[in-house]
Amino acid sequence: MRCDVITLFPEFIRQSVEIGVVGRARERGLLQVECWNPRDYASGNYRRVDERPFGGGPGMLMLIEPLRACIAAARAAGEAAPLVYLTPQGERLTQAVVRELAALPRLLLLCGRYEGIDERLIAAAVDREISIGDYVLSGGEPGAAVLIDAIGRLQDGALNDAQSALQDSFEDGLLDCPHYTRSESLGTAGVPDVLLSGDHAAIARWRRQQSLGRTWLRRPDLLARMALGKEDRALLQAFMADWKAARSAADGH
Ligand code: ADE
Image 1 (tube, rainbow, N blue to C red):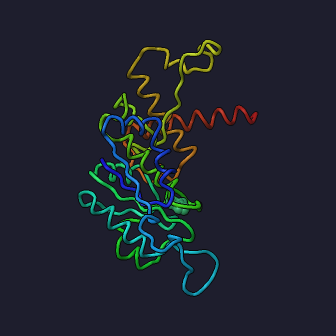
Image 2 (cartoon, rainbow, N blue to C red):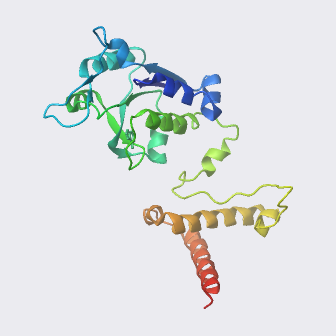
Image 3 (cartoon, helix red, strand yellow):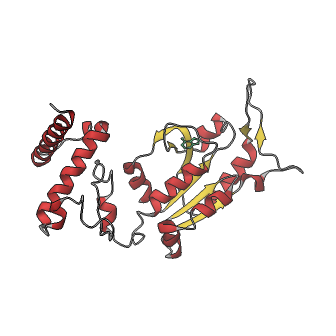
C-alpha cells in the first residue's frame, strides 16, 4: 500500500514511519510513504502558505493555490486514491474505518495547519474527513501518523504473528483481555490459574469472558452496540456476578 501525505511538516511524518512495525513494513516493501509539501508549490520570495480568513477573526488558513497544486501533484504520482483530510470535524477513527482504508492500494492524506482549510477546497477535493479523537491538535500530522500506523500494521506480512492482529482490542468490537508473562521477580503470583492450566479451551473461554467483562466495565458504549450470542451472554453474566460479589465483599456487606 502507498500513502501520500500532504504536509507542511514532512519531517514529522518521515520520522514517525521510521521505527517499529511500520518501519519494518516499509523495509519489507509492504508500505510506501511519500510526503508532499505545499510550500514547494508556493510562489514569491517568501513562499507563503497561509492567508487571513474572510470575515476576520483570529488565526490563519492554509493558502488555497499552493495546496491545490500540491494535491494535484500528489494525485498524479500514482493510481487513483481517495483524499482523506485529518480534522477534528471529521468522522471518528475506529478500527472498522482503519480496516476499510488498509484494504486500499493507495491513500492520500491531507494535514491541515493553522485554523484549517478553505471550505471550497474541502468540497472540491476531499473525499473523507477523519478525526482521531475529540480534542484539538495543532495540525493533522499526528493524526496522519496514527492512521498510517494503524493501517501499516494491518498490511499482510507486517506483523510477525498474524494472529496477534485478530486478538487486538476492537477487532471484534470488544476490548482485549489482560495478558501475563513469565517474570523472575514476580513468579506466577497474581496470574489467573486457568492460564497455567494448559487447558486451551478453558483459556480461550476465560479470555473471551475477560474481554466481555472489561468492555462492560470500561466501554459499555461498545457493548451496547453489539448483539451478543448466548454463550457470550452467559460468560458476561458470570463475570458480572463475580464482579458484584467481589465489590460487595470489599465494601464489607
Ligand atoms: N487536526 C487537529 N485536531 C485533529 C484531530 N482531533 N484529529 C485529526 N486531525 C486533527
